[in-house]
Image (cartoon, rainbow, N blue to C red):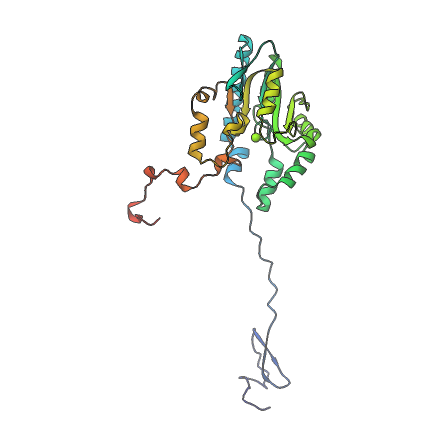
Amino acid sequence: MTGANLLPGCGRTKAIAVLAALSLSACTMTVVEAPAAPTAPAAAAVPSVPMGQQWLYGSAEGAISIRQTYAQLTSYALAKAKARPADSVIIDEATGKPFACGNKPLAAVFDADETLIWNIGPMRWFALTGSEFDAKTWDQWEKTGTGKAAAMPGALEAMAALRAAGITPIANTNRSATNAAGSEQTLAAAGLGEFKHGETLFLMGDDATGSSKDQRRATIASRWCVVAMAGDQLGDFRNAFNKPEAPPLARRTMATAAPFDGLWGNGWFLFANPVYGPSIRGGFDDIFPPETRWEPQDQQGAR
Ligand SMILES: [Mg+2]
């Protein structure tokens, strides 16, 4: 046994602990990393449920808010049905005025997603996988989600009350016309009753105007006297409001300016959606105006 590369204890039976194994033939410093002791695989990060989804899909506050809106809509629509209004609550974008009711049958127009139904299936999937909305997954959901979408709180009671009063619920949604059967079945399976494509269900692809619902609204208003309209996005009321690129304050000013300010809660009914859409795309400067800026005294200028 020679050489300067002897390790302390080399040639004796002393156990050398842990991290190095020696090439004992030469008892030289051929040091090999010992395999790490087997350990449990690192636990995957547990995804958390986004706050907006907690509020909308799980909280008492979210459910109560939705029920309140449905109750207000139902009271409003039933009162209007008795009085037989002259005008629909749908604006004719060509004239800027409401469509006339004439002798048309009564209807109430609803968006579908997060207005009639909760899309809990794909939202759970997106949250669980940490993924953003994607059109391919959503397309599968429209085709196969029957039985997994839940009616919004108060929606069943509202549909029943409207139908009993002779007001036909109509859905105008940006679900795809190619998945019409899936959406008809999804709404029916949620207990909301019949929505029939082309009659009481209007879908993206029904006309050549894409995601704008204006033309579909005009088609509906040509056949029906619409006494109430509901949705969770501004585009559910007028496409002119649907400017996702507009800063939050500009959108807010636009949608609440006269003459539209008088329609909210008075023919137009909005459901809160803190989960998705242009309403939650503001930055710090959009949401916290400079004049409201405040800092703790001991952290002045820290941010
Ligand atoms: Mg919606």
